[in-house]
Length: 137
Image (cartoon, rainbow, N blue to C red):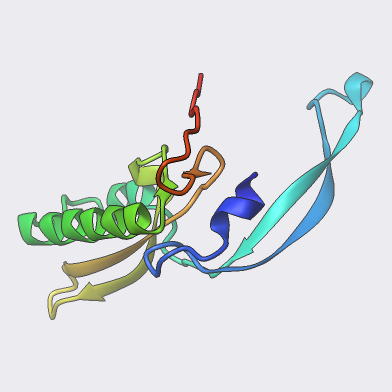
């Protein structure tokens, strides 16, 4: 399902380069050494990680101007997803990857560019006039 959803996403979404699969242990204990096949999504590298971890690693709060800019990026991205008829149901700081960080002369963060990730619960909405149930539990 995630594979079908990530096609044709707006620029705010992390760029997907492709997909691959790998075997992964289903349980951490040796007596349950079952393996299962997992789908892996290969995306652009965002070296700063997710927004939550980035803010924690900074050790100081982001300025109100930087926070407002991130908020505007998210709002613009949500509008782009709406236009693309994609319902992304997992908005949180862990699912915002930090694409770029600009720093001032004193090393302070002056701008953070974010990208949306984790499309596991997203759905592409049908064309106007068609109905779809989007139950999620």
